[in-house]
Image 1: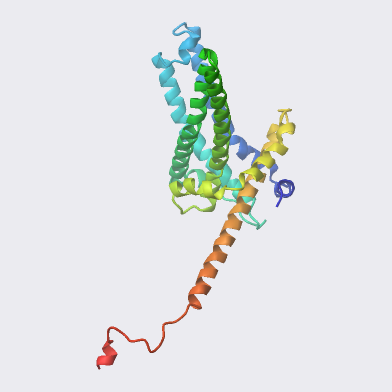
Image 2: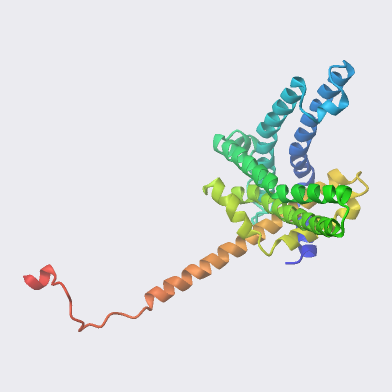
Length: 289
């Protein structure tokens, strides 16, 4: 199924559900912006009162700045992570083949302790993996910048060019990792009883060879999103198309796994039997009697 067909089908799924889906898609984004603006407000007040200079905001020398950053990060993690899971869970229900499928109330999803814990663990693991994947980009980028500024010989210039190339390659690898991590909450919704850690590592195998399809969906919306104004209208279309793609990939894997299991079962049922006259090493109890 091409990206164009996925987008067209996702638009049909949104008929009569666009406004509600838009509100659900805006929930995690609104919470993220709320906490970001709250942190920026505190930083502005500290700067206005003359407690620190602007450069100190990036050094972490002021305790107020450190406490604000830590508290803001923890609050974003506790609030935004469950909302992301709620959004992806509802999108998976919207993409369900059965149009008469009853949508789960948001309160049942977000107030479930198991879902809350799983969403926090997934958010933590995806952030750690994203930071680790970004380390090579930062290392090669800083190394290339130092060589370009301080290098005087041809060898230094050659090393700087190689470092920049490796930084660009590492950056694209990081983008692939981020696209892969976006699929984890959807896999949680499809497999609610599987281990979260297993789903995080399974996502790499799940998205192998499929990232290009996801990128094509986002590329088709780049130019309309440049206007910024239609962003709330287009956001549910983008997320529904993404959720539909993940649902299709899940069905493909389930079908392939079912075919493989049936093949192994057929091979076991038609396996060669041992010769009847083969000499047995041990006699059974029936033979003795």
